[in-house]
Length: 398
Image (cartoon, rainbow, N blue to C red; front, top):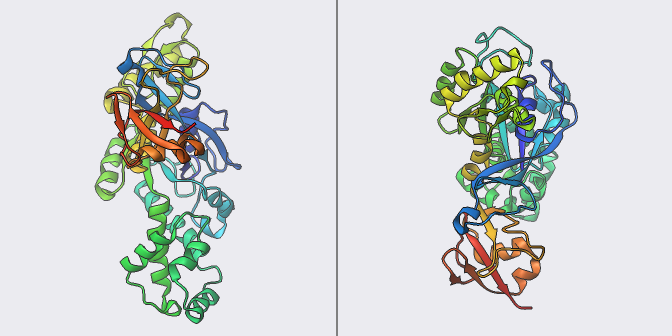
Protein backbone atom coordinates (compact mmCIF):
# COMPACT_ATOMS: atom_id res chain seq x y z
CA UNK A 1 0.00 0.00 0.00
CA UNK A 2 1.37 3.38 -1.03
CA UNK A 3 -0.13 6.78 -0.24
CA UNK A 4 0.96 9.74 -2.34
CA UNK A 5 1.26 13.21 -0.76
CA UNK A 6 0.39 15.86 -3.35
CA UNK A 7 -0.30 19.58 -3.58
CA UNK A 8 1.04 22.92 -4.75
CA UNK A 9 4.57 24.04 -3.95
CA UNK A 10 5.00 25.52 -0.46
CA UNK A 11 1.61 24.31 0.82
CA UNK A 12 3.31 22.38 3.63
CA UNK A 13 3.33 19.06 1.76
CA UNK A 14 6.92 18.13 2.66
CA UNK A 15 6.38 19.31 6.24
CA UNK A 16 3.36 16.99 6.43
CA UNK A 17 5.47 14.17 5.00
CA UNK A 18 8.29 14.77 7.49
CA UNK A 19 5.86 15.07 10.39
CA UNK A 20 4.31 11.72 9.43
CA UNK A 21 7.61 9.91 8.92
CA UNK A 22 10.41 11.94 10.58
CA UNK A 23 12.29 11.41 7.34
CA UNK A 24 15.00 13.92 6.47
CA UNK A 25 13.57 16.01 3.62
CA UNK A 26 14.19 19.53 2.40
CA UNK A 27 11.63 22.06 3.63
CA UNK A 28 11.60 25.64 2.40
CA UNK A 29 9.06 28.31 1.54
CA UNK A 30 9.73 28.47 -2.18
CA UNK A 31 8.54 26.42 -5.16
CA UNK A 32 10.17 23.11 -6.12
CA UNK A 33 12.12 22.49 -2.94
CA UNK A 34 11.26 18.85 -3.63
CA UNK A 35 12.45 17.67 -7.04
CA UNK A 36 12.88 13.92 -6.68
CA UNK A 37 10.10 12.05 -4.86
CA UNK A 38 10.72 11.21 -1.20
CA UNK A 39 9.74 7.73 -0.05
CA UNK A 40 9.46 6.87 3.65
CA UNK A 41 7.44 4.97 6.23
CA UNK A 42 4.53 6.41 8.18
CA UNK A 43 2.24 4.61 10.62
CA UNK A 44 -1.44 4.00 11.26
CA UNK A 45 -2.54 3.90 14.87
CA UNK A 46 -4.65 1.02 16.23
CA UNK A 47 -5.41 -0.69 19.56
CA UNK A 48 -2.95 -3.55 20.04
CA UNK A 49 -4.08 -7.11 20.74
CA UNK A 50 -1.63 -7.18 23.65
CA UNK A 51 -4.25 -5.55 25.90
CA UNK A 52 -6.76 -8.36 25.23
CA UNK A 53 -4.27 -11.05 26.20
CA UNK A 54 -2.60 -8.97 28.95
CA UNK A 55 0.88 -9.46 27.49
CA UNK A 56 3.61 -7.18 26.12
CA UNK A 57 4.09 -7.41 22.38
CA UNK A 58 7.38 -7.25 20.44
CA UNK A 59 6.62 -5.84 16.96
CA UNK A 60 9.05 -6.82 14.22
CA UNK A 61 8.05 -3.68 12.31
CA UNK A 62 6.37 -0.59 13.67
CA UNK A 63 6.12 -0.09 17.42
CA UNK A 64 3.69 -0.24 20.34
CA UNK A 65 3.20 2.22 23.22
CA UNK A 66 0.94 1.42 26.16
CA UNK A 67 -1.38 -0.81 24.17
CA UNK A 68 -1.43 1.38 21.05
CA UNK A 69 0.14 -0.21 17.98
CA UNK A 70 1.66 1.78 15.12
CA UNK A 71 1.60 -0.26 11.91
CA UNK A 72 3.85 0.86 9.01
CA UNK A 73 2.56 2.16 5.68
CA UNK A 74 4.47 3.59 2.70
CA UNK A 75 4.26 7.30 1.91
CA UNK A 76 5.47 9.13 -1.19
CA UNK A 77 6.05 12.89 -1.32
CA UNK A 78 6.23 14.23 -4.86
CA UNK A 79 7.22 17.71 -5.94
CA UNK A 80 4.62 20.47 -5.97
CA UNK A 81 2.18 20.60 -8.88
CA UNK A 82 1.29 23.85 -10.61
CA UNK A 83 -1.38 24.71 -13.23
CA UNK A 84 -0.52 22.98 -16.50
CA UNK A 85 1.32 20.13 -14.76
CA UNK A 86 -0.31 17.53 -17.03
CA UNK A 87 1.24 19.39 -19.98
CA UNK A 88 4.67 19.34 -18.36
CA UNK A 89 4.61 22.75 -16.67
CA UNK A 90 7.09 22.79 -13.77
CA UNK A 91 8.25 19.27 -14.67
CA UNK A 92 4.68 18.25 -13.87
CA UNK A 93 4.54 15.15 -16.03
CA UNK A 94 7.53 13.67 -14.27
CA UNK A 95 5.99 14.40 -10.90
CA UNK A 96 2.59 13.01 -11.86
CA UNK A 97 4.09 9.84 -13.26
CA UNK A 98 5.65 9.26 -9.85
CA UNK A 99 2.08 8.83 -8.61
CA UNK A 100 1.30 5.89 -10.91
CA UNK A 101 1.96 3.38 -8.16
CA UNK A 102 -0.01 5.21 -5.44
CA UNK A 103 -3.16 3.54 -4.10
CA UNK A 104 -4.59 6.88 -2.99
CA UNK A 105 -3.64 10.52 -2.54
CA UNK A 106 -3.54 13.03 0.28
CA UNK A 107 -4.06 16.51 -1.12
CA UNK A 108 -2.33 18.97 1.20
CA UNK A 109 -3.87 22.43 0.90
CA UNK A 110 -2.70 25.66 2.53
CA UNK A 111 -6.11 26.41 4.04
CA UNK A 112 -4.85 29.77 5.36
CA UNK A 113 -4.72 31.15 1.81
CA UNK A 114 -1.13 32.36 2.18
CA UNK A 115 0.13 30.67 -1.02
CA UNK A 116 -1.13 31.69 -4.47
CA UNK A 117 -1.90 29.41 -7.43
CA UNK A 118 1.80 29.07 -8.31
CA UNK A 119 2.92 28.33 -4.75
CA UNK A 120 4.26 31.83 -4.11
CA UNK A 121 3.83 33.45 -0.66
CA UNK A 122 1.04 36.03 -0.31
CA UNK A 123 -0.70 37.62 2.66
CA UNK A 124 -2.72 35.11 4.73
CA UNK A 125 -6.39 34.87 3.68
CA UNK A 126 -5.71 36.79 0.45
CA UNK A 127 -5.95 33.68 -1.77
CA UNK A 128 -8.97 31.37 -1.88
CA UNK A 129 -7.69 27.83 -1.13
CA UNK A 130 -10.93 26.29 -2.42
CA UNK A 131 -9.53 26.86 -5.91
CA UNK A 132 -6.83 24.31 -5.17
CA UNK A 133 -9.24 21.39 -5.00
CA UNK A 134 -10.59 22.02 -8.50
CA UNK A 135 -7.08 22.75 -9.77
CA UNK A 136 -5.75 19.37 -8.69
CA UNK A 137 -8.84 17.49 -9.85
CA UNK A 138 -8.47 19.13 -13.24
CA UNK A 139 -4.75 18.32 -13.54
CA UNK A 140 -5.25 14.69 -12.55
CA UNK A 141 -8.23 14.25 -14.88
CA UNK A 142 -6.31 15.60 -17.86
CA UNK A 143 -3.30 13.46 -16.93
CA UNK A 144 -5.53 10.39 -17.14
CA UNK A 145 -7.09 11.71 -20.35
CA UNK A 146 -3.69 12.19 -21.99
CA UNK A 147 -2.81 8.55 -21.25
CA UNK A 148 -6.23 7.38 -22.42
CA UNK A 149 -6.00 9.32 -25.70
CA UNK A 150 -2.50 8.18 -26.59
CA UNK A 151 -3.02 6.73 -30.07
CA UNK A 152 -6.77 6.81 -29.44
CA UNK A 153 -7.99 7.16 -33.06
CA UNK A 154 -6.02 4.13 -34.16
CA UNK A 155 -7.06 2.19 -31.05
CA UNK A 156 -10.76 3.05 -31.50
CA UNK A 157 -10.69 1.86 -35.12
CA UNK A 158 -8.88 -1.33 -34.10
CA UNK A 159 -11.57 -2.11 -31.50
CA UNK A 160 -14.28 -1.75 -34.13
CA UNK A 161 -12.50 -3.68 -36.85
CA UNK A 162 -11.58 -6.59 -34.57
CA UNK A 163 -14.89 -6.43 -32.66
CA UNK A 164 -12.83 -6.39 -29.49
CA UNK A 165 -14.15 -5.72 -26.00
CA UNK A 166 -13.44 -2.00 -25.33
CA UNK A 167 -13.09 -2.62 -21.59
CA UNK A 168 -10.44 -5.28 -22.15
CA UNK A 169 -8.46 -3.13 -24.58
CA UNK A 170 -8.65 -0.04 -22.36
CA UNK A 171 -7.64 -2.01 -19.28
CA UNK A 172 -4.41 -2.86 -21.09
CA UNK A 173 -3.98 0.74 -22.26
CA UNK A 174 -4.38 2.07 -18.71
CA UNK A 175 -2.67 -0.77 -16.83
CA UNK A 176 -0.16 1.57 -15.20
CA UNK A 177 -2.93 3.52 -13.49
CA UNK A 178 -4.78 0.60 -11.95
CA UNK A 179 -8.26 0.23 -13.50
CA UNK A 180 -9.13 -3.38 -14.30
CA UNK A 181 -11.48 -4.78 -16.91
CA UNK A 182 -14.46 -5.00 -14.55
CA UNK A 183 -14.07 -1.39 -13.45
CA UNK A 184 -13.95 -0.25 -17.06
CA UNK A 185 -17.06 -2.23 -17.92
CA UNK A 186 -18.91 -0.58 -15.05
CA UNK A 187 -17.85 2.91 -16.14
CA UNK A 188 -18.74 2.33 -19.80
CA UNK A 189 -22.24 1.34 -18.69
CA UNK A 190 -22.48 4.20 -16.18
CA UNK A 191 -21.55 6.78 -18.84
CA UNK A 192 -23.75 5.10 -21.49
CA UNK A 193 -20.96 5.22 -24.05
CA UNK A 194 -22.01 4.02 -27.51
CA UNK A 195 -20.72 0.64 -28.77
CA UNK A 196 -18.86 2.35 -31.63
CA UNK A 197 -15.72 3.68 -29.95
CA UNK A 198 -14.91 5.85 -33.00
CA UNK A 199 -17.91 8.00 -32.05
CA UNK A 200 -16.78 8.72 -28.50
CA UNK A 201 -16.41 12.48 -28.04
CA UNK A 202 -13.66 14.35 -26.20
CA UNK A 203 -16.16 15.19 -23.44
CA UNK A 204 -17.06 11.52 -23.04
CA UNK A 205 -13.40 10.52 -22.88
CA UNK A 206 -12.76 13.21 -20.25
CA UNK A 207 -15.73 11.97 -18.19
CA UNK A 208 -14.36 8.43 -18.41
CA UNK A 209 -10.88 9.62 -17.38
CA UNK A 210 -12.33 11.55 -14.43
CA UNK A 211 -14.39 8.61 -13.16
CA UNK A 212 -11.42 6.25 -13.42
CA UNK A 213 -9.21 8.74 -11.60
CA UNK A 214 -11.67 9.00 -8.72
CA UNK A 215 -11.83 5.22 -8.36
CA UNK A 216 -8.15 4.38 -8.78
CA UNK A 217 -6.69 7.42 -6.97
CA UNK A 218 -9.22 8.26 -4.22
CA UNK A 219 -8.23 11.38 -2.35
CA UNK A 220 -8.73 13.04 1.01
CA UNK A 221 -7.85 16.62 1.84
CA UNK A 222 -5.45 17.71 4.57
CA UNK A 223 -6.43 21.32 5.29
CA UNK A 224 -2.97 22.37 6.45
CA UNK A 225 -2.02 25.53 8.38
CA UNK A 226 -5.45 25.46 10.03
CA UNK A 227 -3.86 27.09 13.08
CA UNK A 228 -3.38 30.44 11.30
CA UNK A 229 -6.02 32.96 12.50
CA UNK A 230 -9.01 33.05 10.16
CA UNK A 231 -8.24 29.68 8.56
CA UNK A 232 -11.05 27.93 10.43
CA UNK A 233 -13.59 29.82 8.30
CA UNK A 234 -11.92 28.48 5.16
CA UNK A 235 -12.16 24.96 6.61
CA UNK A 236 -15.90 25.46 7.06
CA UNK A 237 -16.30 26.80 3.50
CA UNK A 238 -14.24 23.90 2.11
CA UNK A 239 -16.45 21.31 3.81
CA UNK A 240 -19.60 23.04 2.56
CA UNK A 241 -18.43 23.19 -1.05
CA UNK A 242 -16.94 19.69 -1.21
CA UNK A 243 -19.18 17.49 0.99
CA UNK A 244 -18.04 14.29 -0.77
CA UNK A 245 -14.45 14.68 0.38
CA UNK A 246 -13.02 13.69 3.73
CA UNK A 247 -11.49 16.97 4.91
CA UNK A 248 -9.28 17.07 8.00
CA UNK A 249 -7.90 20.34 9.44
CA UNK A 250 -4.28 19.95 10.42
CA UNK A 251 -1.06 21.64 11.39
CA UNK A 252 1.91 19.77 9.97
CA UNK A 253 4.30 22.21 11.64
CA UNK A 254 2.69 21.59 15.02
CA UNK A 255 2.89 17.82 14.60
CA UNK A 256 6.50 17.99 13.46
CA UNK A 257 7.43 20.17 16.44
CA UNK A 258 5.81 17.72 18.87
CA UNK A 259 7.42 14.65 17.31
CA UNK A 260 10.85 16.29 17.31
CA UNK A 261 10.40 17.40 20.93
CA UNK A 262 9.37 13.86 21.91
CA UNK A 263 12.34 12.45 20.00
CA UNK A 264 14.64 14.61 22.13
CA UNK A 265 12.83 13.69 25.38
CA UNK A 266 11.54 17.22 25.93
CA UNK A 267 7.87 16.12 25.95
CA UNK A 268 5.87 12.92 26.04
CA UNK A 269 3.53 12.80 23.09
CA UNK A 270 1.71 10.09 21.20
CA UNK A 271 0.78 10.95 17.58
CA UNK A 272 -2.91 11.68 17.21
CA UNK A 273 -3.47 12.55 20.88
CA UNK A 274 -5.06 15.79 22.08
CA UNK A 275 -2.37 16.70 24.59
CA UNK A 276 1.30 16.35 25.51
CA UNK A 277 3.33 16.67 28.69
CA UNK A 278 6.52 18.67 29.11
CA UNK A 279 9.09 16.46 30.86
CA UNK A 280 12.18 18.65 30.74
CA UNK A 281 11.13 22.27 31.01
CA UNK A 282 14.62 23.37 32.06
CA UNK A 283 15.95 22.26 28.66
CA UNK A 284 13.48 24.45 26.76
CA UNK A 285 14.40 27.95 25.59
CA UNK A 286 11.84 30.77 25.49
CA UNK A 287 11.09 30.23 21.81
CA UNK A 288 10.36 26.55 22.36
CA UNK A 289 8.16 27.27 25.37
CA UNK A 290 6.17 29.79 23.35
CA UNK A 291 5.80 27.37 20.44
CA UNK A 292 4.57 24.56 22.70
CA UNK A 293 2.12 26.88 24.41
CA UNK A 294 0.69 27.87 21.04
CA UNK A 295 0.42 24.24 19.92
CA UNK A 296 -1.56 23.46 23.08
CA UNK A 297 -4.00 26.38 22.81
CA UNK A 298 -3.98 27.23 19.10
CA UNK A 299 -4.11 23.69 17.71
CA UNK A 300 -4.89 20.91 20.19
CA UNK A 301 -7.55 22.74 22.18
CA UNK A 302 -9.17 23.96 18.97
CA UNK A 303 -9.05 20.79 16.85
CA UNK A 304 -8.29 18.05 19.47
CA UNK A 305 -5.33 16.80 17.39
CA UNK A 306 -2.82 18.22 14.93
CA UNK A 307 -4.66 16.21 12.27
CA UNK A 308 -1.67 14.45 10.72
CA UNK A 309 -2.31 11.05 12.33
CA UNK A 310 -6.03 11.42 11.64
CA UNK A 311 -5.28 11.83 7.94
CA UNK A 312 -3.22 8.64 7.78
CA UNK A 313 -5.81 6.59 9.65
CA UNK A 314 -8.61 7.99 7.49
CA UNK A 315 -6.70 7.00 4.35
CA UNK A 316 -6.17 3.40 5.39
CA UNK A 317 -9.35 2.55 7.26
CA UNK A 318 -12.02 4.92 5.91
CA UNK A 319 -11.00 5.35 2.27
CA UNK A 320 -9.04 2.20 1.38
CA UNK A 321 -11.24 0.12 3.73
CA UNK A 322 -8.46 -1.93 5.26
CA UNK A 323 -8.62 -3.95 8.47
CA UNK A 324 -5.80 -4.91 10.84
CA UNK A 325 -5.28 -8.61 11.57
CA UNK A 326 -2.78 -10.17 13.98
CA UNK A 327 -1.40 -13.69 13.38
CA UNK A 328 -1.35 -15.69 16.59
CA UNK A 329 -1.70 -19.18 18.03
CA UNK A 330 -4.47 -20.48 20.25
CA UNK A 331 -1.86 -21.74 22.71
CA UNK A 332 1.09 -19.60 21.68
CA UNK A 333 1.25 -15.90 20.80
CA UNK A 334 4.98 -15.97 20.10
CA UNK A 335 7.00 -16.65 16.98
CA UNK A 336 9.96 -19.03 16.81
CA UNK A 337 12.20 -16.37 18.35
CA UNK A 338 9.94 -15.73 21.33
CA UNK A 339 8.53 -12.42 20.07
CA UNK A 340 4.97 -11.83 21.31
CA UNK A 341 2.41 -10.82 18.65
CA UNK A 342 5.26 -9.72 16.38
CA UNK A 343 3.18 -9.02 13.26
CA UNK A 344 0.11 -7.09 12.21
CA UNK A 345 -1.18 -7.14 8.62
CA UNK A 346 -3.38 -4.62 6.84
CA UNK A 347 -5.76 -6.37 4.45
CA UNK A 348 -8.95 -5.43 2.60
CA UNK A 349 -12.17 -5.40 4.57
CA UNK A 350 -14.17 -8.43 3.50
CA UNK A 351 -11.08 -10.65 3.33
CA UNK A 352 -11.54 -14.27 4.36
CA UNK A 353 -9.46 -16.61 6.49
CA UNK A 354 -7.85 -18.14 3.40
CA UNK A 355 -7.12 -14.65 2.00
CA UNK A 356 -5.23 -13.93 5.20
CA UNK A 357 -3.34 -17.22 4.90
CA UNK A 358 -2.16 -16.22 1.43
CA UNK A 359 -1.22 -12.78 2.76
CA UNK A 360 1.13 -14.39 5.28
CA UNK A 361 2.64 -16.91 2.84
CA UNK A 362 1.60 -18.62 -0.39
CA UNK A 363 2.23 -22.08 1.10
CA UNK A 364 -0.16 -21.37 3.97
CA UNK A 365 -2.86 -20.49 1.47
CA UNK A 366 -2.21 -23.50 -0.74
CA UNK A 367 -2.17 -25.91 2.22
CA UNK A 368 -4.96 -24.23 4.21
CA UNK A 369 -7.06 -26.57 6.37
CA UNK A 370 -8.85 -24.22 8.77
CA UNK A 371 -8.38 -21.08 10.85
CA UNK A 372 -8.97 -20.27 14.50
CA UNK A 373 -10.35 -17.02 15.92
CA UNK A 374 -7.88 -16.87 18.80
CA UNK A 375 -9.82 -14.33 20.87
CA UNK A 376 -12.99 -16.45 20.76
CA UNK A 377 -11.15 -19.79 20.62
CA UNK A 378 -13.41 -20.67 17.72
CA UNK A 379 -12.57 -22.73 14.61
CA UNK A 380 -13.64 -21.09 11.34
CA UNK A 381 -13.55 -22.12 7.69
CA UNK A 382 -11.74 -20.74 4.68
CA UNK A 383 -14.60 -18.43 3.70
CA UNK A 384 -15.02 -16.90 7.15
CA UNK A 385 -14.84 -13.09 6.86
CA UNK A 386 -12.38 -11.49 9.23
CA UNK A 387 -13.08 -8.46 11.40
CA UNK A 388 -10.86 -5.53 12.32
CA UNK A 389 -8.35 -6.40 15.08
CA UNK A 390 -8.97 -10.16 14.88
CA UNK A 391 -6.19 -12.48 16.02
CA UNK A 392 -6.08 -15.50 13.70
CA UNK A 393 -4.23 -18.80 13.69
CA UNK A 394 -3.88 -20.61 10.35
CA UNK A 395 -3.81 -24.40 10.41
CA UNK A 396 -2.25 -25.91 7.28
CA UNK A 397 -0.92 -29.20 6.01
CA UNK A 398 2.73 -29.81 6.78
